[in-house]
Image 1 (cartoon, rainbow, N blue to C red):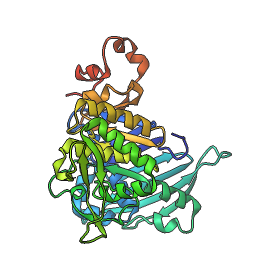
Image 2 (cartoon, rainbow, N blue to C red; image 1 turned 180 degrees about the horizontal axis):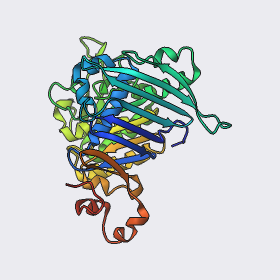
Image 3 (cartoon, one colour; image 1 turned 90 degrees about the vertical axis):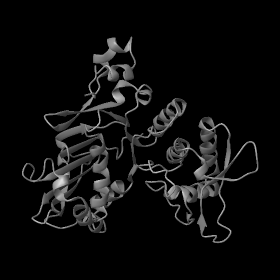
Length: 362
């Protein structure tokens, strides 16, 4: 992807299991590590950031409690600090616990580094407030506007819920089609608008789904005849005219449809985060998924966490971030291809992970 507004670096202090880590990021980043190492905490940070800029910090604090968000609680950690470098812009926020087990914005800053400036120019946006004021500042400050618009387009996707009550299986508003929601609960509406307005991209999705589900023919995307404002996901196969519902797809097939739709759409989010996208997928589907992730990373930035050796084998060493724990704290290390060159002549990355040569195992 183009380097403009790519997240080059994130510095995290005091958040959940992350005490103090400065993490460099590339176009595609694959996080590996044992259960409990902190991969999910890293992914959750971006959902937390989204809640902050949408002025839901107070609600998030009340729901989770500040103690659960601070590294080993407030007795150990007095502040969460997050600093983002997405050149040419910067964003920093500090959050301090209150007596009521909530969080207060202790400081919020936006920055910009022009081509003629070695050091970034910073603007103080918020100090000692219950909520972020970034969205308000964006109305009067160009720097804040750029920062806000970029952060708004970072999305954490989670397609694990494929139960009977999952939104992606139910009727939903056909007008809810501006972008694919994080849980794909508007999948039918989103595919419907793609078919109507971006048929080339829709056809790519269908053809890619057919690689994983050979009997799949096409989606049936029609408004509910009893209420034309609603739509649900339906499909038919190659062997009959019968129309099937999403309930008649396997969990893995439905998740793959969600990911193909996300990664093959025309306008991608500026940053895509996926937590364990391999869940329930056949090995062939994992290989195809890896290809989709690589292709998407040429147009946007991708961060994926995984437990799958098969998925890791599809990537290069420089794509891998190993997540471990050291004295209770989460640490991140990017693999160095040169140091692994002799190993990779004989073993795959997955083998090296499995043998604990590269870390990321108990």
